[in-house]
Each structure stands twice: as C-alpha cells, then as structure tokens.
Image (tube, rainbow, N blue to C red):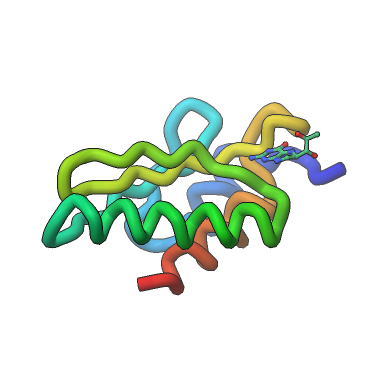
Length: 91
Ligand SMILES: C[C@H](O)[C@H](O)[C@H]1CNC2=NC(N)=NC(=O)C2=N1
C-alpha cells in the first residue's frame, strides 16, 4: 500500500496550480461555460477509473475543483501527485 507523504515532501513536489490543504491536494479549473466543465469532469472520471484512484470532483458554474487524497493511506501519496499531473494533461 502507498505510504502517505509528509507535508514538506508534498509541498516540494506539488505540481503548479495545486494546493495542499487538510490532507488533500486540490486545484480549480476555469471554463468558458458550464458544459465544458462537465465534459472535463467526465474526462477526469475516465482517468480515475483507469487508475482506480478516485478524486472528489466538484462541478460549479464555469469552474471544476478536483481534490485528491489516498483514503487507504489517510493522506497524500505518490498516486495523488501522479494523478494530479495526469489531470493537468487533459487540457
Ligand atoms: C478499496 C479502495 O476503496 C480501493 O482500493 C481504491 C478505490 N479508489 C481510491 N481512491 C482514492 N482517492 N483513494 C483510495 O484509497 C482508493 N482506494
């Protein structure tokens, strides 16, 4: 099972645009319209299923927030950092 990383390591390795808050890493993405955000969220879901590692996805008007943590490890692991980079590559 993946080991949770300590705060310094997470901060050192966090991809640009992501924040580390309360044992998860999060990023907000802006869109020109609501349905573009919905389509993006669906693509994030595809990746999550492929990797069997699932973020919390919050769809707002013209904005989608993605939050990763590893529930099995009780914090942020390599998997979360890797998935964050994969999600960034969607756009
Ligand atoms: C049994 C456990 O829920 C599964 O192994 C997977 C499913 N997706 C998951 N997603 C996330 N974010 N963390 C997990 O620990 C996790 N575990």
